[in-house]
Image 1 (cartoon, helix red, strand yellow):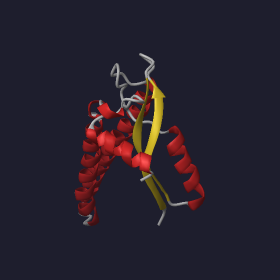
Image 2 (tube, rainbow, N blue to C red):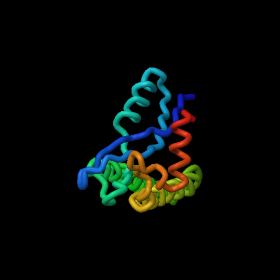
Image 3 (spheres, rainbow, N blue to C red):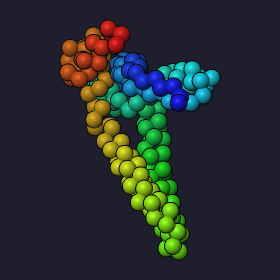
Length: 157
């Protein structure tokens, strides 16, 4: 079994539209079976990861945030569509009387639909993260859920 690391990373950024400096918390999870590659995978996720969090002042997100978010959404949709295509192939084979493929005919469409729903939920990210950005010094005006993350981060939890 591989190693798993999960934690909040505080990411500082500056709005490319209005120039406001702000930060946000990004939940990062790394799973790696190879212990040699685990450290580098964790470092890469911490150093280069982004989340789609609009500027708390003007409400716009950077081009880098949009590009990373688009890659994640397209990946989920591609996996889901691939599974549904696999389902069509399995059904064609199952029609010839292969009983094992009947089981796959149940699992593949459910998994494919799951990935499509996950991708569709990710489309709401710009709306759900609207208040996740924090301007330094204005932490008191952050939503309670963000204030809890700030407190946990400051305590080192």
